[in-house]
Length: 134
Image (cartoon, rainbow, N blue to C red):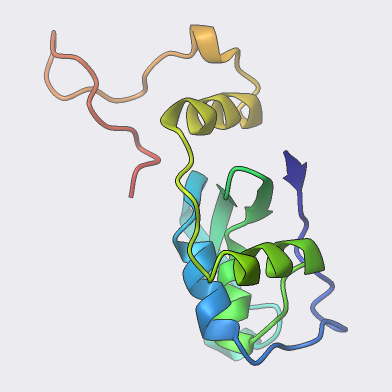
């Protein structure tokens, strides 16, 4: 998979189909998400509204902030991701859970085979949800 960085927000072009592209980004699988937010780098008056984390469509990985900037400011994502969203009619593909777990473990510097669950339901019951699930 290829990691796509957030574009330079000072020079990035805008797109007319931003709402549809944002749907694609929002429909993709979240790998990690932080509880906090960061400041909008384009309009600081909006305050701490930008999500922190990563998402994937199974081919690319990008910061969650990308979806925010596409929605809020019509910022264009990197060309290869924009092209993929448009070719798929703005529908994000399903990403298998095992791929997501592997990516989470990799980002946390863990071996996915030895990852320890961080939350369970009740003592003695199997883990049925992840803190990363939304």
